[in-house]
Image (cartoon, rainbow, N blue to C red; front, side, top):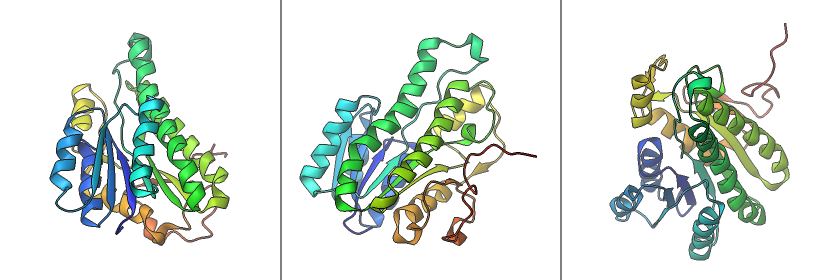
Length: 253
């Protein structure tokens, strides 16, 4: 990752922060985005290791996102990797009991935020004929997620936009994948438990971070348009992986 420019959203905490620390250790230049002012402190902690630019930014605001990306391109000339870790859990409860405003805001942050960052970086990646994009899509994208319909709906949409843009970018040497990090002991997981959500098993932070590092590297140039769990054997994926493997598809009897 030496001198690669890596943009990480949701970098002020949780997996986003852990990813920032890992990519800094690998020598990447970092563009860190988050709504919280904590993102500035994260950047300050990492400046002894690498070049870092931090922006308080609401990813659901396209103007804020474009401003941050443009600043990074002016500074470093490009963006090589985009990691969309920013997300909110949204309202908990049966769908008909939840606040419409909170429901829509969850989709706005999780889905529109992913759209905004991808739309901002892709012209630069296309110009450079190179790029890596990793979008977070949790378990709610792979199966029904009772009590968290907004989160589930937004995350399954993230998987489909990732698959679609991967096909659109096939001729530009840009790989786009969505990842399921697994249940990691973060603030969001604690909120899921507090709201009575199901937690099947808990993984370790190094698992999603290792997947991000792999997908950002040249080792994964043959992998695109896939929905990959942090516990999958992704290092064994072959270039001729069947088209419907590790994707969202209708299962027919």
